[in-house]
Picture 1: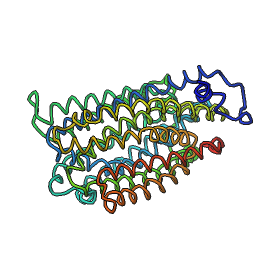
Picture 2: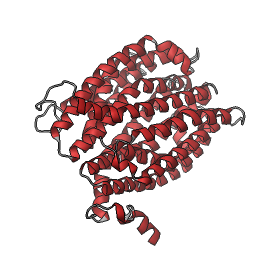
Picture 3: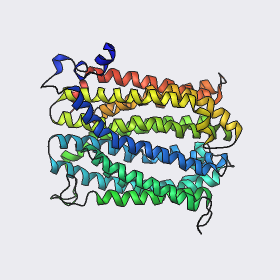
Picture 4: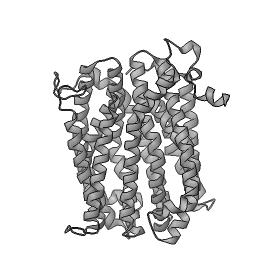
Length: 467
């Protein structure tokens, strides 16, 4: 009991020589962290759950349809990498400006990031549509799924502009602490996606039966809804973030330096992650359509575990950035550790759910016995991944919120882009572990990234970063 009290006490989380002001009691700090975290966590979890339902609905068409949709995931995120890395910079800069009570600076960041996000997404969309087939072939799409995969990927890329702009606005809102706005946007959009999935996949209520293409159209409709809601959140003059404030839309050196200092390293990290994930997915795809379908189902369930950590990390990133903006590095350290403690408690519950409900969860996606049996085995590895994954995501989010993205990018390069694919290949083929081996490589990757990022966090050097 004494150990738990010490472990969760805020005063034990920071060294005495690093304290620069009066420390509040633990209760209000936990309360603030939870109040900031629950909307982003609920958003992330609901979006992942709805994404899982999306896969279940596609799964009614057979394991080939699941594989066709799954093979597009990493190529799509490679194209989104530029936007996602920009958004890391947006969150870090707006959080720092919020802590400094610099509304003009926050809105300058918002306007310039919208110009970048909109312009880049249009160019990326055109490139993705034109080169869709060679991209998906290289990703591992075989003749049995390439037609559906092309239909799904090209339709999604049509909606890349709406998706990108909405993501950028949500990133800015999270930076200033308005996590409920992002939650409302994404949850609403994904509910719309599910509704139109019902209409378009199998042709209900007079709508045409479009199969996998129908699922993609439903997703783009959801993107558009999120885009409209996000735009509405920044057009009111009274809001902290508003495009109707004084100041033009021209690029400014000071703001762009802040965005590029954080965003460029985040881009390297995103590209490393996506290269690693892409190579990893290609290795798994070579195991066959049945194994890849089981892998895709388990990936959807894994996303639920990741989403808890990701939602808490969003709040941690904003709290760290705001604390550093207020010149309180001691509170930044405490908020980071509070967030990690919360993530550990959540992952403990997930481990039990994944172990005891593994067959049930897989059976929600498919009725094919070989897929269920293989997926249930993978779920045991997923249970082991949950704890290091959630903690790793939160600690990485803290470092990003402080602007220490170069270190996180370096860890991603070494662990995810290099070691994970190598270990996956060794486990899948020379060791003949098949799909289980691929997931063991993911476990090793998560443990390695957690160890490196937590070691960096413990040094406190990240608290001295300027944004």
